[in-house]
Figure 1: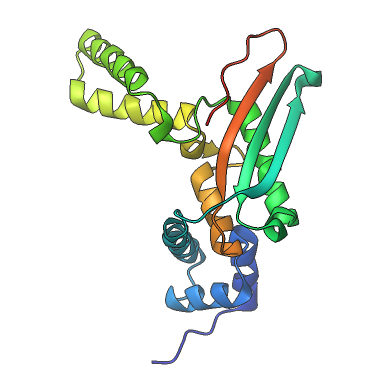
Figure 2: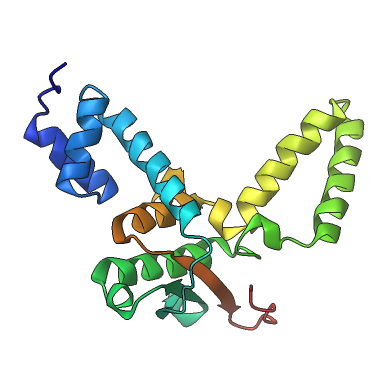
Length: 204
């Protein structure tokens, strides 16, 4: 069966949305019958698979980026790693680090990933969620699950909705770049500074 002819404007739109190459955009659009939304999801799914395959690789290059806001009263610093100096100097990689620093300053997460959350913190939170469910007469298990998911999306950077597009998580934002650069990319650590407040320990 012959491939579906894809209009150039759809390829352009998909490139703008994902940053993927022309050939990759054309291929997934042909596979999805020209449906841009489905093509975006397919590219992200494939990018996630590539990201998983690179998890064991060393990522010791990268950059440290800072963002300062509110007239110098609020700031954040993040270390973003990749595998090569070539990617570390790439404009899109540097821009990603800037976006992450801005995200951190705006949302003040406590940890990089949900696996970094202390078990005691999660357990204490879930005890409180069960208490709230009982007080409101709601099903305990469903309430705890819902509130736990919401908590994780607030305190863990990678699980947060991206501030410029809340339909995308920070993890997906990074995964898209992994697919584009073909290298492992990871947030190693970050910290948030607020004038006059005690500094929390940096995330690892």
